[in-house]
Image 1 (cartoon, rainbow, N blue to C red):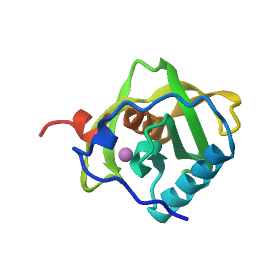
Image 2: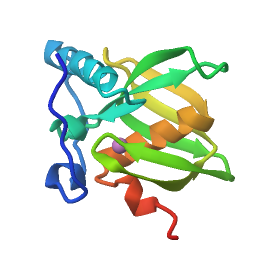
Image 3: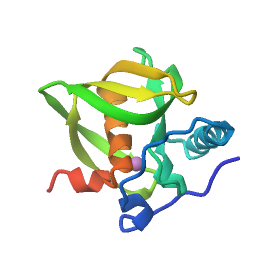
Amino acid sequence: MALKMILGADNPILRTRSKEISSFDKKLLKLAKQMIETMHAQEGVGLAAPQIGENIRMFVMKFFQQDGEKYSIWTVINPIIIETSSDMEIDTEGCLSLPDIQGKVARYRKIILSFLNERGEKQKIKLEGLNARIAQHEIDHLDGVLFIDRMEKK
Ligand code: CO
């Protein structure tokens, strides 16, 4: 079942630094599943836990293949960016919590991400382009940062 979305640039839930996750139980698996269902229902490419009212460090995202169409779904817990490219890329972003806004945001073109999956297993992946952008956007959510904070001024 899809969950209710938390909306608004000034919503305190979206402006809080979320807490690390330390227990990997059935409740967490259920929440991850519901977040994936919500992301699909909203036709998003990523969804962070604060956006459904939980201030914990977890997000789900579509990890796109080279062709840009096929994707797998990742559940990312306690993410840490351990390396970034020196160059950044500017592209248009939106956010399910700010449905009426779009804007240009600069993000690192490549990142190496360390995180735990929904079973608590350690993962390390290299992300590029759109995949790297989605992860950086969602990690910002866990720190109470929204893309409008990073938007290029006209
Ligand atoms: Co967002």
